[in-house]
Image (tube, rainbow, N blue to C red; front, side, top):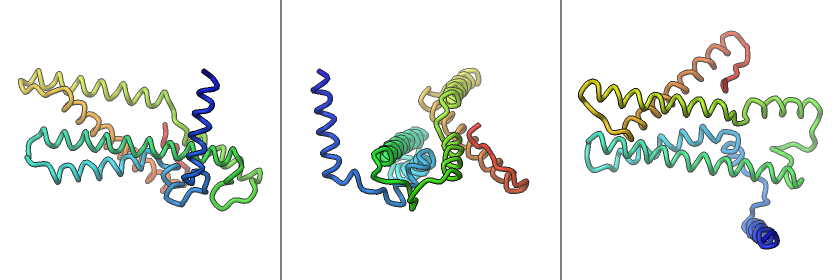
Length: 191
């Protein structure tokens, strides 16, 4: 079984090489790998606006379907960007690419890269907190609809809760960035 799995991996990497997977990444690929969440949000907004534009009706259901479709499209773009990040790390590990325009790593550059990597790595506890906040907000909106006599469906409440959280995070990041520009102190936007 291990030999079969290993041969499948060898076939995958040989097809990847044949399709140009070991070429140095382009500038948009490097940007996407550095900013997978931003790429997902941009793609999500574009998909949602497109789906709203082509929807036949003007009801709340069409808007929710457009938001859900936009979220799925953004998720796919984010996952693709994360896969590109993995490909770039593999190229560095194999010694085929040393980063954008770099020839050799100096100690200072390595320290800056380590600090930047510490700020940009995925923080699972933070994602767990966002998921818990999303579930709580979804339940609160659903219960509020029941209490007021205007029951809303659960997927609609979940989509609206997601929209509220995304807008809140964008607002928080913009606030932190503006405060950092005023004081000159770098912000840690991931906390």
